[in-house]
Amino acid sequence: MTNPLIQDPGRVRDLAAAMAAGSLSAQALVQRCLDRIAAVDGQVQAWIHVLADDALATARALDAERAAGQVRGPLHGIPVAVKDVIDVRGLPTRANSPSRANIAPASADATVVAHLRAAGAIILGKVHTTEYAYFQSLPPTRNPWDLARTPGGSSAGSGAAIASGTVPLALGTQTAGSVNRPAAYTGVGAFKPSTLSIGGVGVVPLAPSFDTVGAFGASAQDAAYLAAGYAADHLGLRAPEPATPRIVVLEDPLVARLAVASTSARMAALAASLATVGLDVRQATAPASLEEMLATHRRAMVAELGRTHARLPRERIAPRIAEDIEAGLAIPDDAYLADLRRLAALRTAFWAGFAPDDMILLPAAPDVAPASGSTGDPSFVIPTTVLGGPVATLRAGLAADSGMPVGALLFGSPGADSRLAGFLLSDTATKVDL
Image 1: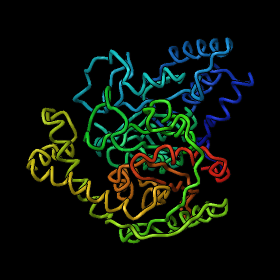
Image 2 (image 1 turned 120 degrees about the vertical axis):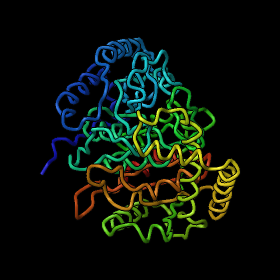
Image 3 (image 1 turned 90 degrees about the vertical axis):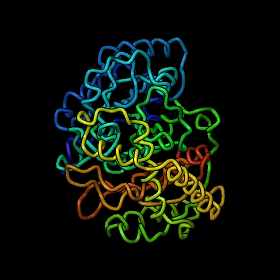
Image 4 (image 1 turned 30 degrees about the vertical axis):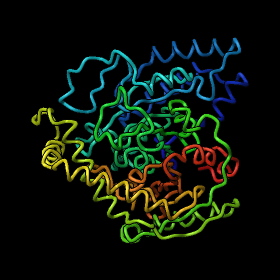
């Protein structure tokens, strides 16, 4: 039975081609998004602020530029949603927290938003997040595949907005697993650039050693297009060379213990599909413990949460955040710095076991999106954030038992952003429709 809440919002390549051919205008695309929001967002609840008039005016201006022969790039005229921890001028950045309920509208765009505007993207509005992009409090956003389930966190609105067909692209942030996991749970694609490679000016911090602005799209390819619109030139995302990586299916006790049978089945099918289109696919044991990465990241993240948000009024934030701020402040500096050194050592040990062109394949989560009240299990995503390189969420199909989306993580070493994007934009990846 067809789910009326699920709709493909269109792929960047197709939308750009239609605009170039004159069969679609930016104004018509924005209006299509606005109509879809009106039709389904009362149930999905992904959106907080919709900038209808501003978006339509921007679209008309961009259509005039195109008519004059001025096209800024693949994002010209493409609408984008922005997670509400990222500043958009004229809108308050409340981060889903009572502590920011009365905050004034942002006087300027976050740097990443400004760069997207310069690239021709249209900012359609703001979408929901968990409080301060942490585990609590949860937003009202529902998973459009099953309204009784969560879309994941913290970038809940970003994934749900795309999956429900209300916008082609969205910005999120990842400190632990907040881009790649909700993308998997909602059946869309994502691209998280190398950790710390994207400046956070105009972004509410959580744990600065890990906070990274990431991209959502209907496919991982689309997410790579969006990331190219705000990433630094040295990442090479704007003109990546087509890449043919060796795919390494990662084996680790953590994955063996937690992954359910339906997830493992979809991962095996995805690996087989990648082999079918001519990629070299092999299996390998993780050279460093994913379990240790999880535990060490947790301590370092909580230490930075405490130091970053020590002054937040405890009575105006979720109990989980208040408790973890106190726990973070109780971690001595020596212990915190030791954890940062340990994470660096784990990165070195892990990547020493692989060649530069290896891309690692891992389930995005042990299971499909859980019932309402949880952001889901980040156990598989957090190690990829720790390992520091770019991470894409690939769509691995639907679980046989639940019919819910299963996602896969494809990630490379720190700085391998261009290689990963080059693969996602290649004809080989297009054949598999990642």
